[in-house]
Length: 233
Image (cartoon, rainbow, N blue to C red):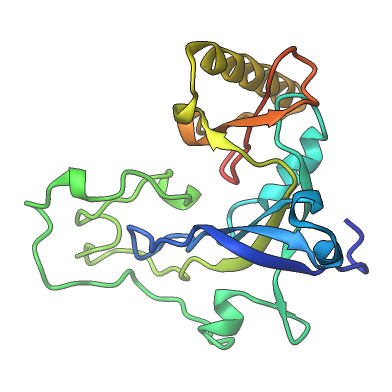
């Protein structure tokens, strides 16, 4: 985690390269990766890592900070490193890449179309934006068709970030037996409780965030399992 040291990874398999369902998403991409120095080894002997690339909302803390705060404990995925992507020595952000330093401060955009009859099930139900109470509202009070007295504000910013994980596995829904499901839930609960005692409350305990790793390093008998803190903890 020394900022002066760097590691080079070779991305060899995409795990999540799908387009987002919303315009203002994080554009998350996830790959399997090897350290370039391990390429001299047979495949079965190379260390496997997970590289997560995302455009983090500037109002959120980096996901890696939560792993640092929790530490390496049973039931929680192990992080190797994290940081902000830099291009030509400058942090890669919406302001530097898209807006090119242009400062904008204006009323919310106005689209000349009715939003009243929109099916709420087709719209995102939440977004990481504390100024909007963690909700995305396509009605007339927030983003679209704002009232005349809508206040001016600056657009939300995003920062290009990456996270490298040492823990990998399968979502709990892919468990092969009821016993494996129970073991995974037990380990995840232990990890959740440990994180809570260290000041981190997980915000999304879902099947995609509880992994079956097959690790033999768990302090529990049988197969090891971990849960993954998210950046919106």
